Image 1 (cartoon, rainbow, N blue to C red):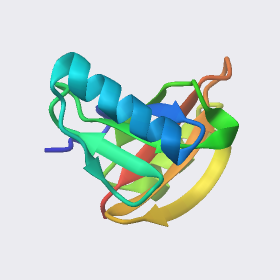
Image 2: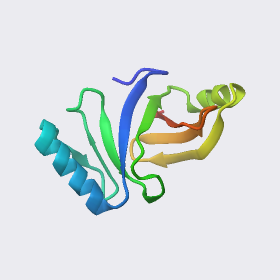
Image 3: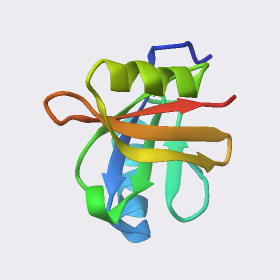
Image 4: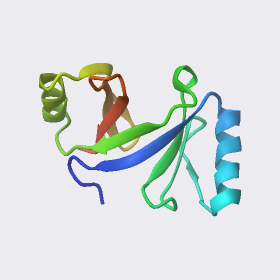
Amino acid sequence: MSEHNQIDLVELRASSPEERDRLTEFYAKSFGWKYTDWGELYSDTHDSGLTSGIDVEPKQSNKTLVVIYSNNLDASMKTIVDAGGEIAVETYEFPGGKRFHFHDPVGNEIAVWSDK
């Protein structure tokens, strides 16, 4: 169950659907993880301890993305901006929720998501 202000997901990045397929096959063979495909651009697994996903994002390939859950996305965005974070990707919707990305003060990109 997702809890407010806790790391909920780690995403690996792939630069194409074919690369995503290679990654899901690799991790399935290496660790026995079973993935659920959500279209051509996203897969996730709950077999990795912490939920993990593989996201096709050509501009951000080969970077890991930490995703934090929020029960109030607007309030979290305000708190992050007030603390000095910079919004990198405005809020967008996806099947199951919505999220935004921000850069912390040293440039790490983090995402915050909510199912509300």
